[in-house]
Length: 192
Image 1 (cartoon, rainbow, N blue to C red):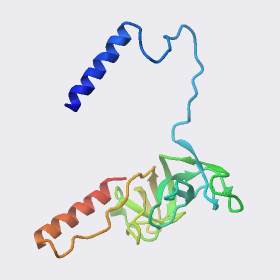
Image 2 (image 1 turned 45 degrees about the vertical axis):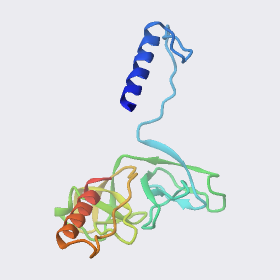
Image 3 (image 1 turned 120 degrees about the vertical axis):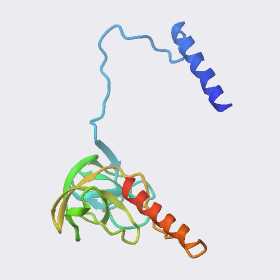
Image 4 (image 1 turned 180 degrees about the vertical axis):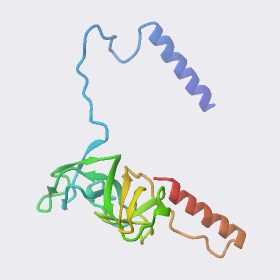
């Protein structure tokens, strides 16, 4: 029924377009137009009452304000900060910071290997990542190039996804536990 309703609405829009009766109140262009655009991959975020540094991994907290990335519940990595913004003496949202994402960025790592290239990495702090989930499992990005056991290139983008942390418990059969835990691992490694 819902699909039928969408089809009817689409047909009505097509008919109005053909009859030049669109409800948008605009006509087709007859001259050049200056269109506002945003640079691809650059966004402005209101900063919490903190200082964020240029080149750092940054996240939005559960209130929607930009903070230095940290392994803390409720954070979502949104990219790499373009310039230092010190809002420590202000109220949350007084200042904004420009953030770049997606971006390939070189960051220190806790302990990684060449075999981890292509895997999702997790936030340790605002400049360090690791392959281990940590307590909150905040995704930092995907390892795209191994430099050394303590450094690598990350593809950093707005994660928008949490991490599945809980393992299946003993209320399930062993086969179900194995399947649930395997699915959890796949989801955590594939979804950014």
